[in-house]
Amino acid sequence: MKVLIIGKGGRENALAWKVSTSPLVTKIYALPGNVGMKKYCELVKLSDEDIAAITQFAVTNKIDLTIVGPESTLVRGIVNHFERLGLKIFGPTLEAAEIEGSKTFMKNLMKKYKIPTPNFQAFTDYYKAEKYIKKMGAPIVIKADGLAAGKGVVVAFSEAQALSACKNALLHGKFGESGKQIVVEDYVVGKEFSFMVMVNGDKVYPLELAKDFKRAYDQDKGPNTGGMGAYSPVPDISPEQFEEALEKIMKPTAQALLQEGRPFKGVLYGGLIATDKGITVIEFNARFGDPEIEVLLPRMKSDIVQVILDVLAGKQPVIEWRDEVCLGVVLASNGYPKDFVKNVIIRGTESIGDGIFHMGTDIINKQLVNVGGRVLFSYALAKNFTNARAKAYNQIEQIQSGGLFYRKDIGVHLK
Image 1 (cartoon, rainbow, N blue to C red):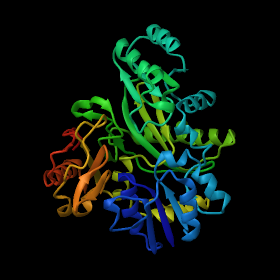
Image 2 (image 1 turned 90 degrees about the vertical axis):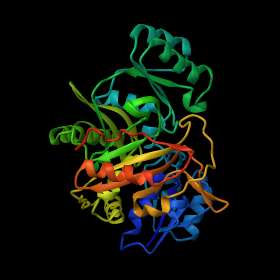
Image 3 (image 1 turned 120 degrees about the horizontal axis):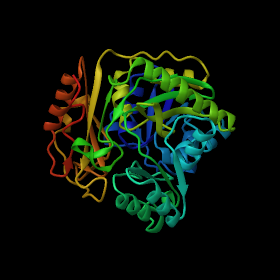
């Protein structure tokens, strides 16, 4: 069968690698793909946001299955277009993807269906937000309502920081349309983890847990990013907490979307936190997490294509996992998540082999260079986290570039 993977980041590189191991697959296209995907896919030079062109490509090339990576493609309604033409695609409709596309929608859904989440208020008026923040005090969390590539959240530890974040979004247009409305929510303390489940309507099939690191710098300092590293499994979360998250959050959320006439199909990602009062929701995404999926797929023994086909057919998939753990570290462009210099030469990746996923690279003048904020993902499987961490960081030492930085503390506390 022919498979089309939409997207160009580390998530899509990991998916391309995993899909390429399926005996069901004869051809893989990646649209637009990246340098690291060339060994598995034929790259298609179309924008992953050009829905009409993507649809035409799928029809012309008789694609049997399309897997959508980026949230920006989903919220443009690609699944609606494909389904109208009878094309098989793994991802939620525009209506269901609003659980990621609008944090206000997401929070109101949870409030209506009594799904645990921190208290919140939504604002379009800066002065009303200012009054609320002064009443509530800090720490407090400010979130742009729409998509902001993981950079639209500010955890403010002072009132001044919170008000600055509100001004940036509501008065200065920092996030454009995405920031015309903000959500201000209570700050909660606990152990964060990522829980992805495969969903088809009211059928929910859990994947194993992962943990990512949102802050740019060591010791969880600096601004929020799209993620600077990840590991799986998550020893801090007990089997009982796993079941609590599945039964009280993930399944009820799929059911809530069904009740709202927005049945979800695809991957529902819960950014969750285990507090002393139980597990609560920080965020929902409507697709595979990045970089979490880059540490989950190497651990998955099952054929990802067969799993997806079973989910789409409403059948119980067989999802088996390796005993090994996986840990990965992001190499990002200097300055990320703010402005950064592109086209800095990168050497040494070819010696690492399968231990690297490309996130934001290109070939210019026959040289590998950075073209994105997050550039490479060094990952390793091992029997324990000590060995996986050592291997992932040893691989990074083989990479030479003056334009990249990375966190040194990913999984440092794990054995």
